Image (cartoon, rainbow, N blue to C red; front, side, top):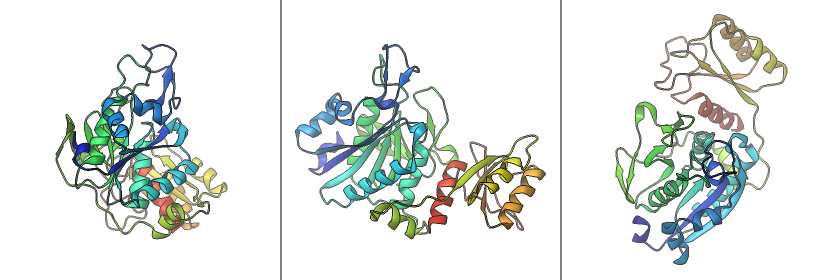
Length: 323
């Protein structure tokens, strides 16, 4: 496989998730407990990855052990610091992160935004626990290692079910199927086929606009980063401004609204958001639609999310407020 083309190391960082989950019986793919298997045990069971370890080309580290539905700012901070540390090592070719599927897209976008890596950082996952009759995690890890080892690969990507998705575009779109992720209109970056890559478009590139102060405080500093209070609200039939008013009373600093269609908003919700904006709260308008983006119009009172999904727009707004 491609990982044998050079002698540099691959780093695998474990954070938990379904890929490290266990169920009481092998046939149970939903009644499991996530984050039970350590990253060392996980990779030792995969022949192609164990071979890297035997050759002295594998580094593993357990950064966290959580169900990704419970992903926290503390884990993000630690993960960013460890990724930053390994990216700086000349003998490291690339990094793989085992992660739960639920918040993988947010973690991927966060890491791309704050680290903008010139080396590949590959998040991978599983929809079935490690105890399943036919777990999907081992192949996903093997594919992720192939991507992390590939010459010229760069940026934060996600690998699942043989597809490579960019951090900018990836979204979880299915609750149960093994091929649970999509890149929407953009399409996947490429595919892994028996250890080789077939690219459909270019690797992610760094965007210097992302808050340099956030990068410094999260990745470089030993001090605890202060995370701004940003929430997401949604537009729907009969929406009111009550949630916005409650969040204002709680001292919210930023709001992302998942609008209907092209970011459209119920007039009562829009009025509450404009009131919050006038009070100094940063407000951003995204869409709850899976595909497409909010197309701005002249005179829009609330800025759009520049194509980001609501959850990623929230991450971007937190980094903006940090800066």
